[in-house]
Every structure is written in C-alpha cells, then in structure tokens.
Length: 158
Image (cartoon, rainbow, N blue to C red; front, top):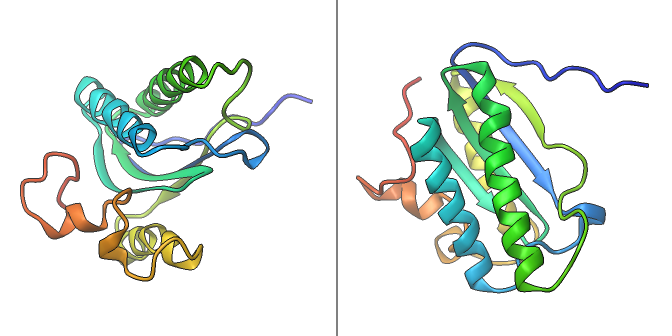
C-alpha cells in the first residue's frame, strides 16, 4: 500500500518530529548534538526557512519551522537528516538506517497554539527527567529564545 502524500502549504509552519530507528539513541556525545545543530544552521542558510523552536532529545528531534515554499520542507529535512546520518554512521562505524521511517510533519496555525507547541517541545527534557530546569538543558531553543540576535531562532510573528 502506498504511503499518503505529505500535506504542505505555502508559507506553512510545521512541527517536525524525526526519531532514531527503533527509538535508538542518535546523540551519544555532546559533539553529536553540536553537529546536528551545525547541519540545522547550514540548511537554514541554504533554504532560508524560519526556525521558531527545537529540542534535540537523545533519540529524537523536534523542530518548529516555517517554509515559504512547500517543496522546501522535504529538501530541508532530507539534507539535515542525510548529512547527520552520514556523520553518525561514519563516526560510530555503523551501517544502515539511522532514522525511523520518514519525518512526521504537522501543520501549525500561527496563533497562540504555535507558542504552546514551542513550549511543549522545549519542556521535553524536563518530562523525560533529563533536567529539572529548562535553562540547564543545552540542546533546545529555550535559552536561545531568551537572548536577542542569537542567529538561530527567528522571532515569532503571530
């Protein structure tokens, strides 16, 4: 049975989730998180999407982004995930799939729910008992959103 087509819209805002294959750990060391963020920034510059929030968890990633052209969404995620998978498999001498299936994308209306979604994903480390305080978790956008001109997170315009 063929999979259903991804729903995308012009100037769409999306909650993206991508998970390690069989829920495996995809970030083992701090430099792995840093490398994923490097690829995120690289493809943000290339495709000019807006990034409103993110959270990198040990076995999955949440992103909240806006793309002006619906075709860019898959290109952005393909570039980030492929680049990171090549890096990860080379570094840890692995072969095969790093990511479980294709990424999940949910359209978000630019209304107060967008803020709720960002707050939800940034609170993931607390719910997963990785930290007690959001300001202590280095792999989410929470601390970046608190600073101006961080160069990664775009300002929200609802």
